[in-house]
Length: 162
Image (tube, rainbow, N blue to C red):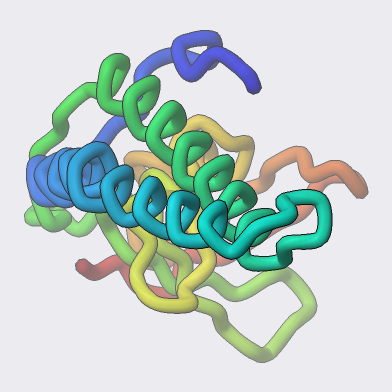
């Protein structure tokens, strides 16, 4: 597992921070109790080497503990940011931006922020990623270029919203 602080703090809105705190609290209380009960019930069924319920419960426990560690690290190094809903019409943390790639007629919406703040199935662009860095502070009508793994790409900012 990588250290969450290695790339700097994760920027979260107060709402997302509160939601993640609540998720962590639920996992460390109710979640752990339920998993312990499921493991104990599976143990009561006998031979653990061929007990599918036991192995499934232990697998669930491992995944839950991994999520708990992830949330603890993320929240420990989180930086709270207020989303100033693009009052000035520029791209900032927490905004939704509509982009058109050069040579493409279609547009696509992206959420600029942390993956933990994602909105539905909308793709997320981290403000620290090359595209995010190129977009921050820009406005609708601006064209930006950024370095992608496959080479430089150019996008037009069609719309900035929340």
